Amino acid sequence: MNQQNDQIVLQVGESKNSKKVGKWDIIYKEKLIGGGSYDEEGNGIKIGKWIEINGGFNQGSQVIFSGDYKNGNKVGRWDILFRRDEDCPFIFIGGGQYDEEGQGLKIGDWIETNELFMDGSQVTFNGQYKNGKRLGRWDILFRNFEYNPFIQIGGGYYDEEGLGLKIGNWIEISDGFMDGSQVAFNGEYKFGQKVGIWKILYRSSDDNPFSQIGGGQYDEEGNGMKIGSWIEISDEFRNQSQVINNGDYQNGKKVSRWDIWYRDNDDELVSEKIGGGSYDEFGAGMKIGKWIELDNRFYKDKQVTFIGEYKNDKKIGRWDILWRYYSSDPFSQMQLILFIVRQNQYFSGGGSYDDRGDGMKIGRWIELYDGFKWNTQVIWDGEYKYEKKFGRWDIQYKRNKYTPYQQMQKYIQNLFINMLVAVDNMMKMV
Image (cartoon, rainbow, N blue to C red; front, top):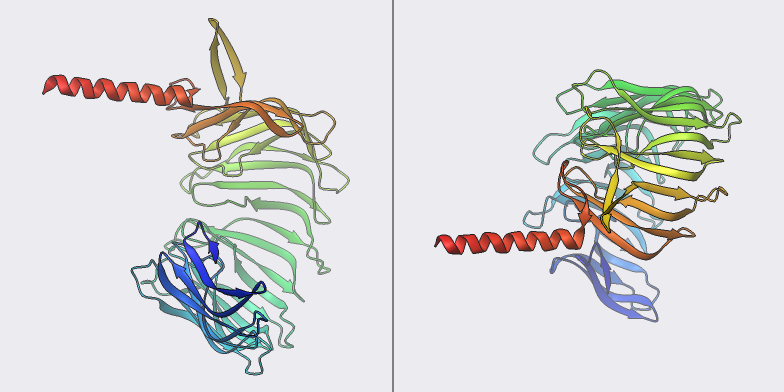
């Protein structure tokens, strides 16, 4: 029995000598949604009719594939189906044909989906295959929800020789393209490599046109290397996390000064410079000197930065954690106040890395909970030794902007006491 996605999806069947045999069922929330058969000889080969689930199958992305196997390879027609949730029927959204010889090669017209096809991110790629390779025109279509029509937002051409190489002008979309993060890229391909000027495009919603927010240049020799000045977007770029990085490339490596800019939303015409630092001048792409970096999940409700030094791309010495409630506020260093024998002890957010340049955390650290934001201010306080946490670690919680941090256990005790007082007052009123 295999379990996936927090034990929601189960694959149930028999094994012989560590190989799957006979009928296997795929069960989601105690209901049969798919499955098929393996050969009885114990080779672990899929045969006959199968209904399979997408690799990212979950509550919000319920995609299945239906078709036939022959000696472990897909053959004939395969359909792609989707449903919003378990209360809805599966509906057809795409599919295509595999060769009948059993080589598992896609042929003819296909409609394929993005990896996490779901409400808010329903993307299809429409075009032709020949001997398992894309060729000719391929279109990219998008809709927010299943009741809306698909609208073409991009696409381009593959070579006609069947090598599966992109050629000419393309409009591509980001891997995480969805409602709230609609980013596209426009430029030229030459024998499967990006060349010349590429633009980064963005729109806040389906109702707005795409507009350029960044871009730069690739070398003309077809090596796919970035050169010269670039404006790039962060990996988590979306409506509430509009972060861009601006600097220079040399032979595909970042060099010299790079700045980090942020704006809250589309209504703000001017971005704010909130971070950055320098890369080495030799083109090794190594961070050096002082840097102000952003939390990986920096957005409107979690405006956290880290300030410290790099040496040969490794963090060294003291690194501080700063944050702010609103974009109009200045960044301030987080402080934890402990009352010990009537003496206030102040510990600033952050800690130290070893000075040898190994990038190892050492000594006292105050770190953020992964889900830290304005209304979930949870931090961890403890010691590191050779990059490993050891000894006592305390969890501190702060309810709002105006209250100090207090240990989680104490906070829970206070909540319980306040609840008892409230109940007692209610009883007196009866």
